Image 1 (cartoon, rainbow, N blue to C red):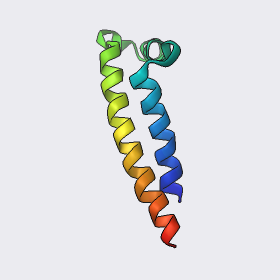
Image 2: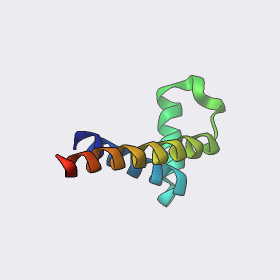
Image 3: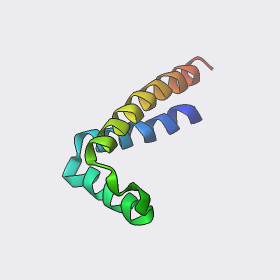
Image 4: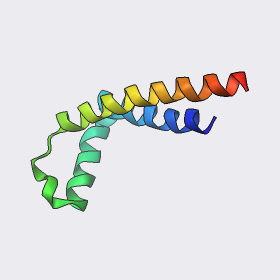
Length: 72
């Protein structure tokens, strides 16, 4: 169950990053660059790819977590 809840968080984060909902990707990139100046070369496409990975991993974790909870 906990795996499914954590998966839902990563699924939503990945969805926000890949879809760039209301400029979410640019805002996240600006925060990351402000906190860590080494990442100035980063582009929004990097965060969108990372969002796609988070989306896929979150979906897999939700599937594994909630299907295990249903059988318990």
